Image (cartoon, rainbow, N blue to C red):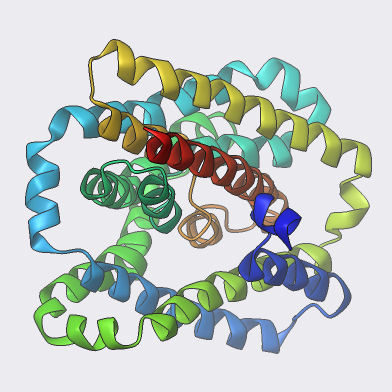
Length: 325
């Protein structure tokens, strides 16, 4: 059990693996897949409604005031990650193939995580308020920036008729509108959410599991495992690990050079070094219609687990350091 905790293999991670295995052996397809997709979209909308209800107005105001920290996180998330992904093209495209490289690049275009960024910042004794604002801002702005980056750097080179406007509208309706509705209704429903935090968490994780199962089911039906060998999976895992290592080293030292205090450095480190699975898979389903979604989301699936493992170890180490001081 200690080893599982060290590797961040909690119940959710194990269930994530189970969903992938279930999709491999019992994929949903045909009319059932269409119905499952509708139910999943409804669950996603409710999930972002709950995210909106959880974020306080005070946190939003504080986040706006602490613009320097958010500018650094924004630069990591939507500038540094994409630059590294694009620079890796000459090496990764021949090794991974077009679809997996697109997935790797798409991962670089995604916003940061919300829950895990806040949780790790809290464990490491960093600025939780800054993490809440920065991670939430990243997800909100990512609904607009990610489709534009995909349009310019992925489809701009292969599908000249691609227009990101419709994708932005779909993402806005599915993710942003429910989030705003949650904000507006927060005074009414937040107290009920506090009384049942386990139910909210279960719904949160359950929605991600549904999305992953649906995406990988479609991939299996389309012949994913006939296209991806164990060798390519190893290459992809190494690429994700190297990317995370480079980003984390930069996220460790750059905030120090800019003169941020320790608490803010920790928030920048965890918010600026991670990519979201919860928003990534729904966005992929909208942005990559007609493409093998399983191939597109496989890089973020692998990167997601690596980042949880590494951040879990680092957060615990920094927490002990803070206690010793």
